[in-house]
Amino acid sequence: MDVIRVNGPARLAGEVTVVGAKNSALKLMAAALLASGRTELTNVPQITDVMIMAEVLRRLGCDVEISGDRVVIDTPVELSGHADYDLVRRLRASINVLGPLLTRRGYAKVAHPGGDVIGTRGLDMHVAGLARMGARITGEHGYVIAEAERLHGTTIWLDFPSVGATENILMAAVRAKGTTVIDNAAREPEVVDICAMLTAMGAKIEGAGTSTLTIHGVDELRPVSHRTIGDRIIAGTWAFGAAMTGGDVTVHGVPAGYLDVALDKLTTAGAQVDRFSDGFRVRMSQRPRAVDMVTLPYPGLATDLLPMAIGLASVADGVSLITENVFDGRFMFINEMSRLGADIRTDGHHAVVRGRERLSGAPVRATDIRAGAGLVLAGLCADGVTEVTDVAHIDRGYPDFVAQLRSLGAPVERLTVPDEPDPFARLSPG
Image (cartoon, rainbow, N blue to C red; front, side, top):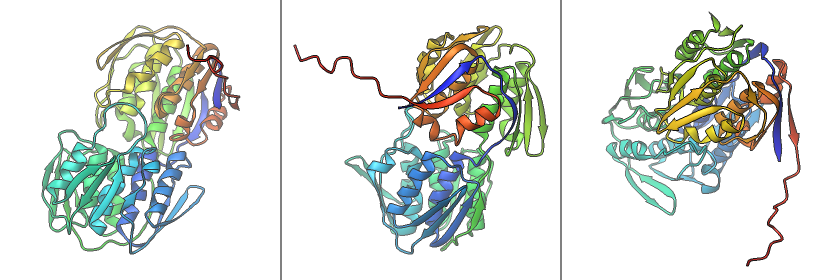
């Protein structure tokens, strides 16, 4: 079992360059299914989820090569339409092969996806949107099965600006017959990134970055080379880490505009934030002030930064109200924060956090990707040793996380420790 051990307290200081966005790269890999031939993606993060998605594509018939931050996908003329359960259950983003497979070959059988357990994330909007475009969709034995001779354009209203549903419908619509309009579409930079790649492939898309996407279907797309945008969630992690630890961190590789709300909140908390062309600098010379925060779809505060917001509030001067509006299971990690001495009370989707000057090191468990990173940062604000287990979650979203922390001066190490024996193993029933 691997653990990340933090010897606190410590501050983060230095410069760090952010790699490509996990939440973009995985969808760009799915988009490669839309055109036969050789697609090249660069600035792709070296994380577990990319390896899983590569294997999903291989089993669909693609040849996938990964070298450093470069992924080359050779998509055949004839694709399989079956995305295996054993892989798809490990990766939420794998559901995004549904739209490309359906519009490309008229048939897709995709297992219900897995990924982080952070709340109810149904496929209702994905399915409803594709059905409005003429797909016949059924479900059996844990699979979504979709069929259509050719999808047709229509107007689709999303009840919520879901990133996954927007991207799946978008990728299905680029080769549908006629014009598709997606109202209340997600506006995240990752959606803009996939629109940029699809446009380079020959798609006709209007309104990228707005709440209305208009897609004029084309008969064929071509493979392209595309550079993935920087990961704003990793950038935000370092920004909050600097503010939590009284540090001074300069982040390169992500426009500050991707994090306007988060950086404004850090400024309100007392940090000095300097913005420049390819990043920003966050400096905190005092104990953070308490700040209320609310997660919302982009351009609001990203739900993936909620663990970091809770961490900041836990060491702030005063009481903060943190509200989660996107995923109903985001607060699962709060029990782990409480082990570190954080004073947190939850009521529905609200958390009241009374800041303490210092937390206390303890063994904790990562419950998802972002919670794991947030717990490590909280360990930097704690007296003594904090050991974070289940760090495979962190590997899914943060390449070289420990190495980057150490480059910023954090006394952090990754260790392999033996699994603890089951104390009840030798007890017989009765």
